[in-house]
Structures are given as C-alpha cells and as structure tokens.
Image 1 (cartoon, rainbow, N blue to C red):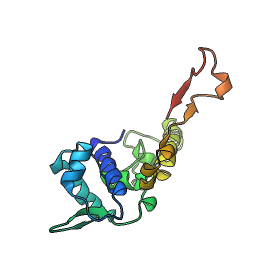
Image 2 (cartoon, one colour):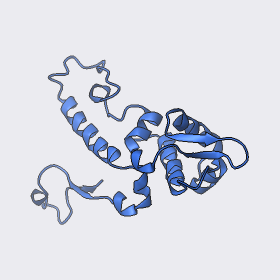
Image 3 (tube, one colour):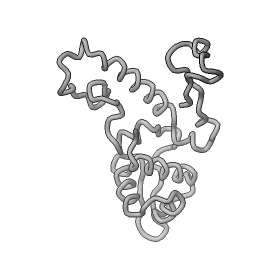
Length: 166
C-alpha cells in the first residue's frame, strides 16, 4: 500500500503534468485543485525538487514545475523518493535490500519467491506508468487478471469468479 504522502505526490504531479510547458504553478493552486493540505504539499514538493523531479521559481510568477518531460518520469521513481522501497519485504528489494531479521535461510524461505512475484507485478505497473499517462486516461484503464490458474479453470462460481481487477 502506498502512503498518503505518495498519493498526494502523485496527485500534485498529475496537476503539474497538466500544466507542463505553461510555466510555474502555485502551491495554493495544486492544493485547492487536489484537496491536499498546503503545508503537507509544500514538504512533498520540496522533496521532489531535491530529487530532481521538480524545479521551483521564487518571486512573482513563481511556483513549481516539472524539471523533465513527464514521459520520462515513472511512478516507481516517485514512490521511491517519497516512500522508499517498493518491495513488500526488504529481502526482495532491488534498491534497498536488507536481510529479513526473522529469516533463517533466504534460499529455503517459502515467502521470498512469492514476495518477488508481488514486487515484479507492482514494478511492472509502476515502471510502465509515466506522468504522461495522466494525459491519456485510456492508458490507465484496469485490466482483468486471473487469480490462481488459467481463466477457464475458474468457472465454478459463475462468470468472473476467481478474477480481480488490478
């Protein structure tokens, strides 16, 4: 689950993507448009600026704007800046690996392969969703994903049984 801070960051970046190429955007505009507390938003935008995703301009006509083209910024980059590791457990993190303190042997751990699959599935979505995706809502549509086995094996409880939307 992503944090509220990450959710607000993504919402703010959506607004900045909509305004890309038009100049700096005021914090108060983003705050009002996305219903984000202004003080919290200030801290989020500063963090994104410090990591090179945004730039800021002071004075009259100042505000925040994307430093790079929105097609070059993906959600994995944003989430790592705001929340840190994306992996569900530290032992499967690609960028923040730490051995689990309660694991005796990673090689025989039954949970690790499952967590790797969860990580890879999440990364597949996050890395392939750029800020530009917000400009084209069809790129953000959910798709039906079979849970368990093949889709035709999941018909015991009626149409759509055993399926989730992701």
